[in-house]
Length: 286
Image (cartoon, rainbow, N blue to C red; front, side, top):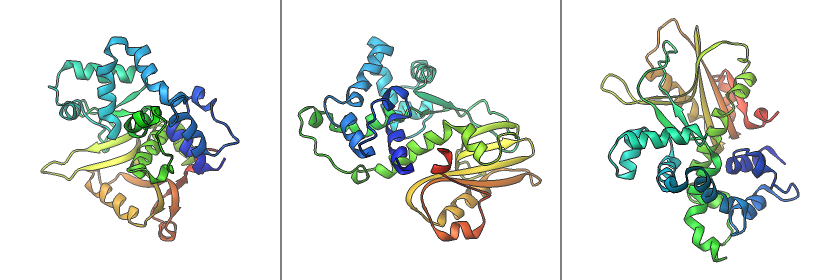
């Protein structure tokens, strides 16, 4: 299979061995996804309810609600409460932490890029299980039609919001394989103070900023942008420059940049020489 086909399968299954066992290599990625997800007898059509029932039993509904709230992207407990229309309290935080404990959600702590220190506040929760997000975004909205055998097959790329969904799924794969990414960038032997996604809320003194992957060794800073698009425009250079400009950094701190991507790069991205590392998805598979 080609790298783009493998990416589709990983975006749906998250690389879970039990799900990968069901892949028929004689079929295309889309045919496999159609068989597993969009037919009433498909393993991944049934799996979601089974997972939540087996793990959370009678409290499955509460955990499912929080997972659904996180399907659109990372949120703080306060933001989860706003999405669900519930009061913020220990219950929501406990549910989010339980989802993290079983590996469905990751806790993203805020980091000071200037020092590499973890900050005590600003924890966000990310739905890091790719299958759960795919189910909530793509399968569940069509569940009744699938059960009745009325679901009409359509190309995955034609689905509403497909690019934004794949952006989140691709980002999950990158963040879930940090060691591979850092190795391909030649940083495997560099001791890291911190590495992970970075979020800086908008304040009066500085603009908001979100960095897909920030890696902080002792004497430098690595800023990685993660992109999934058919065509990756040269405007990505301007985007990353602006993000770095909004960071509060010591003047003597070296900053290097990387682009982890799936898609076709605009020729000027490489010729501009702005990014220190260009890492296509196919390189991460090697």
